[in-house]
Length: 352
Image 1 (cartoon, rainbow, N blue to C red):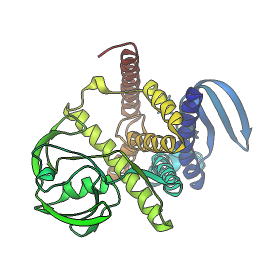
Image 2: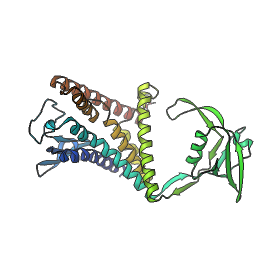
Image 3: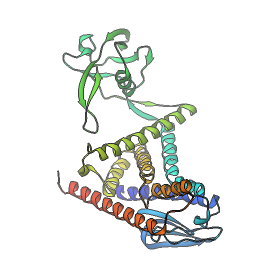
């Protein structure tokens, strides 16, 4: 069941991405010849209007084939009025951007649904206090509930962590203990810790950990939109930062995961519940949006790069250069896919 859910999630994400391209292409009068979910041998095909809608054997991708635009042969052009080639560069850029935009929009909508179902967060109740820490020095103990820091309301442990991290100087901490409210003053220590990327970073800490209790947050309509926007932005920032760390060599290449990892994690999320599945689907959707915007020939970002070049120089790249760069892009992507799949199986079968 988990495997089936994973394949359905991947297919849905691909469908939404390609739907973005499709809608933008039709808006600008471009004829879409094929709308395909998956690659390889056709499993199902139906022509509606002048477009062939297709399901293919391998559900690990998809494409919208527009008239005059073919990644398998980038020199194939058409001068017809309803061709992709005859549209202005800025129109082609919008068509190309529409796919990644659809992924970001889908993530936003999923986070919006999560906000309306209810968001589970750790409560700001202290579980442990470290020895010789600022928290111990001011007398914080297990089961103390932090309700305010420097006059700002604290609803979740995330709020508490953020206030400590962003603070500059002493903290005025208001707690609830045995139905009584107390206010204490503490100055966080600055210690060198490991970030999620394995880097050594300096962080302000009080020396406390959560007790593990959770609360469910419910939002108003406006708060739901703010939550969905913030979560989409956080996911985008995290993926961009991860790419930066990968390029810098901080994240080792052996940690890269491919489609097998995505299927595994999605299956696990589906078993954890609908909110976990929606949250992971949103994250993967943002990931697809970001990766497709990378300036690699054969991806949307590469095509956008070619069109920006045409806008600046007032001439299209030569067919020879376009063809060679697209081939290089495909070789890079297929090599990367093979490498990540190798990493996946290496981890599954006991590799370190």
